[in-house]
Length: 82
Image (tube, rainbow, N blue to C red; front, side, top):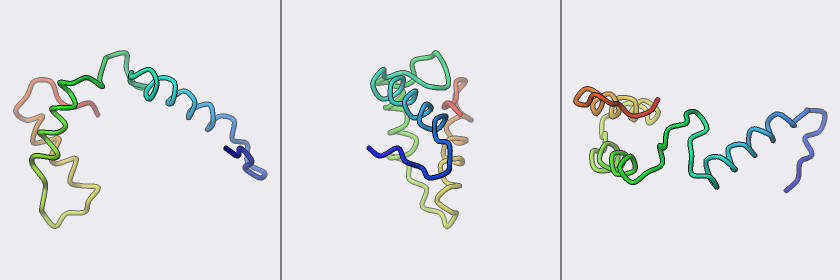
C-alpha cells in the first residue's frame, strides 16, 4: 500500500488506521470503549433494528438510521452505542 501523500503529513491518520485495524478488526474490540460491542447479542440487535425494520420514508439516507436507533432506544433501558 502506498503511503505517499504529497506535501501532507499523514502519520497521525495512518496511526489511527493502524489502531482501528489492530483493535477493532483484528482484536474484535471497540476503539471507543472497553466494552465488548461486537458480540452475537449486539449483532442480532442491529439486525432487528435496521435490517428487519427498514425505514422506507422519503427522508435522506443519513437521517434514517438515527430515527431507527431512537425508536429502539425508546423501548429499552440500554440503547445502541452512539
